[in-house]
Length: 233
Image 1 (cartoon, rainbow, N blue to C red):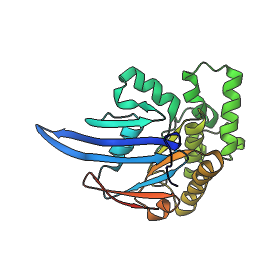
Image 2: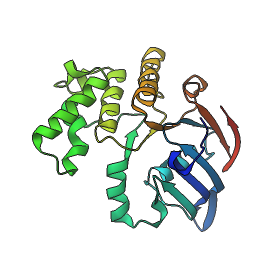
Image 3: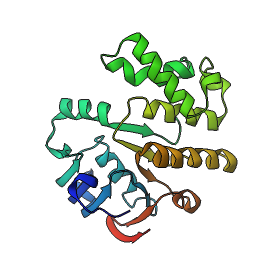
């Protein structure tokens, strides 16, 4: 998918650098990364451990902040936001899918999906409508009263995806979403993510080590030693 105009660009990463400190020694993680992601794109970030994939994902998601450069998402330069502004932006614009699901064990599937909506002004009736729609998308309406311990790994990840989409975010970020799943469950999750992209137009950015998972994306970008080395479509 090409980007032919500003209105079609969802994410612009411009000359982004990020370092961490090990004792008194700075450790560069990303060095002058620049690229764009089109609205409705499905992008896979690959590379060896320590290449900066998750760091880049966290910067785009507003979990971490850049040392230099800018990240513009839907016209908002998130590098200019303070901590409280960034938290509000993140809650409204980003859906998170993690490797280990991050579900609350004492809450049902329904209650886990509802969590992000509790920070909004939606009424209980409106929240119910959103939650039931999200659970229907991931084909788990019949499991909404089940606790995580009563669900398979694949079902738990589908609950996590429902939670990620329930606020209708601008982008979905997925960090190794199939890394804790068997091959069949992983295939089902990737199929679901593909449908979210194709049918609902969700912009998806996925970090993965798995070439089979990356094949589901439209574009694969390779990170190595903090540099963006290769782009394949």
